[in-house]
Amino acid sequence: MSIWTADEAPAPLDQRARDRRFAALLLVGLTAVFISSVLFNPSEVQMDGQYFTVCVFKRLTGMPCPGCGLTHSFCALGRGDLKAGFAFNLLGPPLFVCAALLWLRSAFFIFGWGGPVGVLDRLAAWLKPVKLFLLAFLVFGVARIFYLLIDSPSLLTQSTLFKLMAGFLK
Image (cartoon, rainbow, N blue to C red; front, side):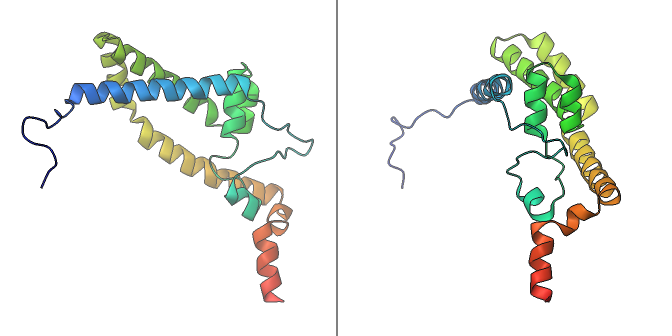
């Protein structure tokens, strides 16, 4: 039994109000990401190309996951360094551009500018960015690991997981 009577029940939000709320949330969240990209200075990259990471996969295996380097890439892009953005993660700059387009779409939607929203929606329907990025991250992640295994096979033998497994086999 509901605690609301028919007269006191709150009116459910209509779809337009929910969409506006979601667009506002995206706008605020992405604004925070972009401001952080400009202000945040992640750890410096060492001469051997290594840098501090909180990635559990990389800490265990010594190999980068498909998302490794995205924070550094976004921060480089926030400072206008496109070359470093690609160097940290090849998918960082395209993801940054998609985030910027999503930010614009959210702003256009909130201000009621239907024309640009429609154009961006048609572009998203044509490109299917979520599927495209999932496939790109899968291919990029596997290719990067294979490249590193061929180029530096010692990375795997120096990993925490390898040392742990070797300890169990002794």
